[in-house]
Image 1 (cartoon, rainbow, N blue to C red):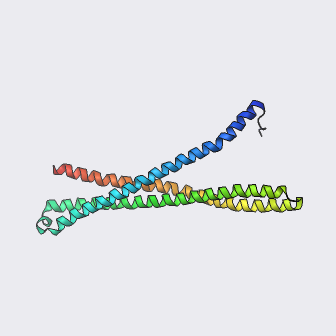
Image 2 (image 1 turned 30 degrees about the horizontal axis):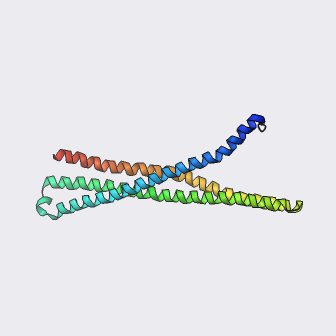
Image 3 (image 1 turned 30 degrees about the vertical axis):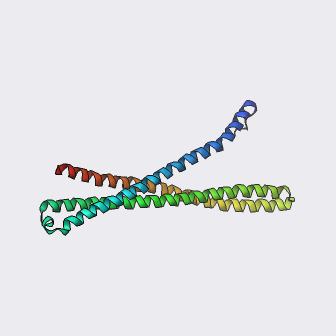
Length: 197
């Protein structure tokens, strides 16, 4: 095992130890910012999906209502293409909503994790104060109580980390498929419109 650094190495170690929590907080802040931007993007995508579905559904209904258009093969093809587009947009909308639901769940888990971290820190500080004013018999009881409390909190944190590790890839998968379905719908629309002209 390595001994604690001495002399100038000790100063470097102290500097590193002081900078580490600040750097970790910065990384955590940027990670949360990235998630918030992602959630905002998918909220906008959901609104765009819903509006596009409304426009496409209105066009389908307008064509179906008019009997002279309904019997024309050309307009029947348009209806079929619009139905495919609407289905892709619905899939995009559902994936987008699920993405944001999982994002909200991850945010709640992160808040729980931070709350437990705060609790562990405060608990250790409080127990250190109690331990300083306790007899040796009481110190053993305080140590045992602290160990039990910390272990319980750490188990909860491990469960939170496990769920977060499961939910992150699910959220990314849903996000990718949401965008893919949206792009597929608009690609089909663009291709079909280019054929009409």
